Image (cartoon, rainbow, N blue to C red; front, side):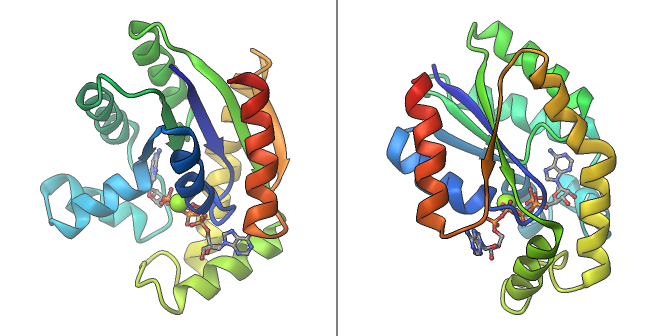
Length: 191
Ligand code: AP5
Ligand code: MG
């Protein structure tokens, strides 16, 4: 099993690159943001709870997202591997993921971390906000709040994987294809 984390701040291109990587490597894409938006669209109790945090640019409680990931792993017993996008985002989530993957004897192989300047992140998200309908994209204050959450609670998750020498920084600016080639090169070294 090949399990990888695509890491990076809001707007760094995790979703964009995930689509291309899962097609190339046959991995199962697990994006907690997408799973949460699915619940919101269905207006489930979980979705309603999550929405109040997401609208403010805050992280959803750990128990909620860990439960979703645990179910998604169980629902895909035959996956060749998982691409985690937007998860783990806190130390507690990283610990929980390690425990879940230990049960499968299939640890994280590598964390690919997209490096993008803050100015570029805000530019990309404001641009998408013009059309996406995502309530957390069309307000610069909410975008900034997401970046603050990232710095305070998420950036440190990379330090956790650094201890195991699993982090590779990848330049996340340039064309989508250039970045895809950089990511593919790192995966090919390890696959
Ligand atoms: P989530 O959905 O994960 O959003 P995010 O990480 O804040 O950021 P995005 O998904 O918007 O960015 P991305 O890195 O995927 O970039 P993308 O490819 O879309 O989370 C949303 C919320 O859900 C969180 O705030 C939180 O409340 C909650 N949540 C989710 N997971 C959670 C967790 N684990 N724990 C707790 N709460 C959680 O690209 C962005 C834009 O840039 C697009 O328009 C794209 O077209 C464009 N773009 C991409 N690449 C390029 C390029 N190379 N050049 C120019 N433009 C580009
Ligand atoms: Mg995304």
